[in-house]
Image (cartoon, rainbow, N blue to C red; front, side):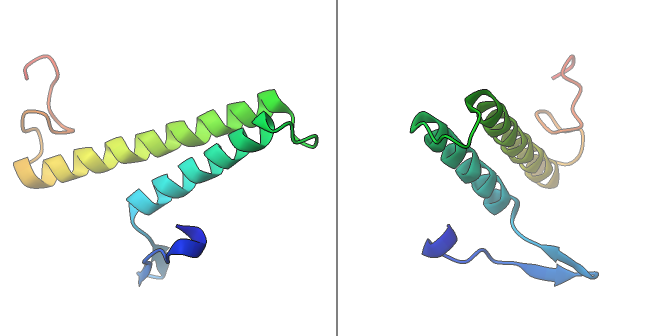
Amino acid sequence: MGAQGQIPMAWHDGQLHMPAADVARLLRSIAALWSEWTAAGEPELDRQTADTLAGTLTDVADQLDLACIAEVTDARLGPGAQGGAGADPGTG
């Protein structure tokens, strides 16, 4: 990502859209960069704050991945199908 490649984006209904996988990858890249900076002792960064923010970005990326998996599962199996986002965990 970044200088290595371009993220595909599209306009739809006046809004800019990009693949969720690229957004998740971007969030994880930023989190990793912050962690590297604090590990290297970057003086302008408070380690605890940077680590907390990095963890939060990683959590958001994980949630985005899970939401996408649920959408794909629902699209393939139908809403409420076993394992889908709408499935009742007590019955599946």
